[in-house]
Length: 137
Image 1 (tube, rainbow, N blue to C red):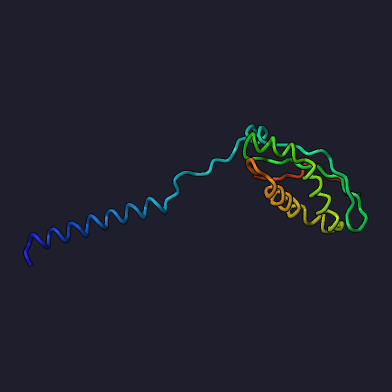
Image 2 (cartoon, rainbow, N blue to C red):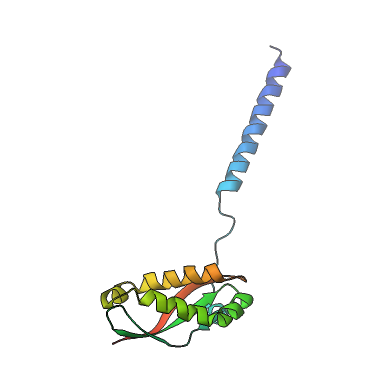
């Protein structure tokens, strides 16, 4: 083989290798770290529910209140308008729980509320649900 052909082939292989490495590095490295929202941003995009009083499957009474964190102003407005649906979901979820389920499964209840409300949302979404008050009798 001619020396020029060998040099051209090696150059092409080196260029393709460097390009492949650069592409691999670009696509596998994180572009930016997800920034945690500040307390002020959380407060600006959150909605407090009214206290909801309902009974559990075993006859226990629960009074509970939630703080819903949304992803923006439009979602906050929509959540405010959908408070009646939130109350409906809470009542339906809690009628299937007993005292022990409620005490042990509060995180599951919050997650279910978030998922079911997000199914109804048209503008934005609910990022998180926090229980801010609860009384079990």
